[in-house]
Length: 283
Image (cartoon, rainbow, N blue to C red; front, top):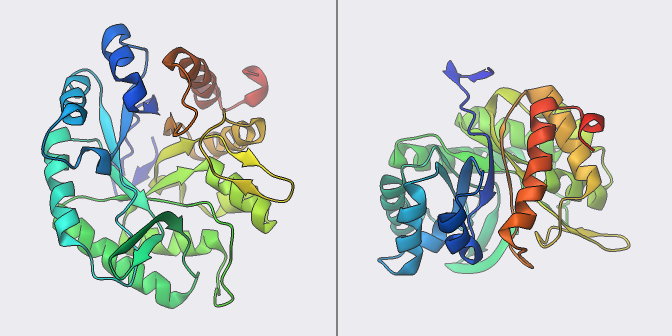
């Protein structure tokens, strides 16, 4: 097993994002899912049905936590009120790990509810590394950072996205949530080779992989999470597994959510690729 900083990389298997549409099905049918990922902000509440279902499902399945609003790249001060609630949820869930995105989500306390890319500069690296280090110190554990999809670039950028990502995670000594669909989306939108991205990824730091569907326009791909995984994304996933070995992998579906049984069929294909790493054996 690949190791990062002397620690063995855990392998959880193959999971799904936990969505409210599937709460009862999960409890009633106990599907063959190895683990679930929760959106942290959905459960940073004082009570109610979300926590009721979370606790019941957590009794039966391992979980990881995935945040969407830490805004680690923002110039606003770190929100310690948010981090305090996140810390309390970590204590409740006892996740295998927690993650958020390498991005910014707003400024002047205004959340734009979007995952916005950063300029790929040395100044941005230093800024993010300092903030990740403080978050990890406060929470007492390493975090995973996820690469985001993007539709714009900055004229100030000095590095390729993959070099920026590598520098951040290595200097901050954090881990990676590698979103394969996001790599594919950004490669199409910005006309780069996604395999070049994979070549630059420090594989020993990849603890989790995201797979998802997208919306293909004529000259643009949008990361919508409302379609099945596309064949080219499966192909890129198979290549990632060949390079990095088995990595805990899950499917994100956030809109036009199908029945759980349909997602399970998709997860079966992911599992076969993840176990073999050879796409033509599982198509």
